[in-house]
Length: 375
Image (cartoon, rainbow, N blue to C red; front, side):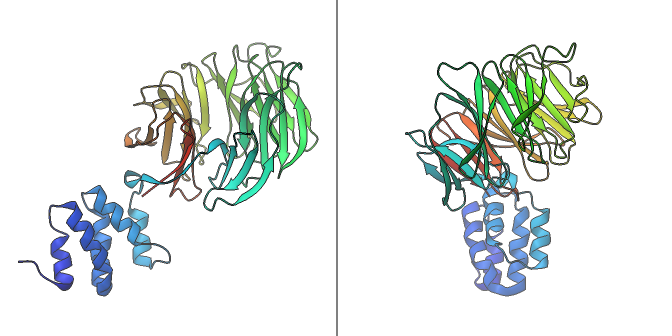
């Protein structure tokens, strides 16, 4: 016998069919505090579909009981594909996931707000083939590497809200990696001739070049990955020589190399709490190091092709990875266990970032779709 009212809702929430439980949840909040208690309990339901439905019931504003329950709920196993924006060739996401830089078929760069699609400013097409691009948090600072015909080496164009402020010249070849220090005044770039350059964005001048002249300390191959730690004290670099180096930004002494050797490194990232260093690249593996101890914490395997991009969530508890196998993997950093696999992309994953509250993941790639993933 199927009961009505609150008793009926409770009864249906015990049925073995997930679809019936989800339908019952939609009615639970009609029954005051007792219905709310049923909905909160569903956050721990064995069915992911039911947990996701319960999670979505509680939008802001929420009472203390709901806030406490949500805080205890792990949203990342609930992530699935949300809306997408087609025809979008993404060049970069800002670090907090709020802004997107995309390129039109005519080569124009548009910087716009991801949530609303509202355009902020535009940049003209690059004067030659463009390399890596970087969009700073807040969206106002955009950097792109450009090769100008009949001019040696790549140049770095620095734009501030659509106005070009600097053109930085000094690399003999192509640029592999770009990173911005938290003070937003120091730019690091890595080159194909094994050099790293630090630039002062206040003056537009090079601060130092870290290259083969630094005996025993420089890279011996193209530098493809750069990452500052969240305090800007250290810069981490990696590339085709399969080493990862830790540079002290102020002293710029011979770098430490406590991380051993890996395969060729395409991406480096430091967790928000400065505890973890993640590296990924051609060998389809993610390496996680405990920075303070200088020891490898985990080796994450699951991709079937090179990894193009990695991203930590806001508290460093989750790491997302994506690449040429067209899937996104979510990992628990502390244990190295796989949280879940997100599928549906029809091209290589070339860009990933979490929003600053960790409630959404943005991805983009060769299929020219910007996708939003969330519970």
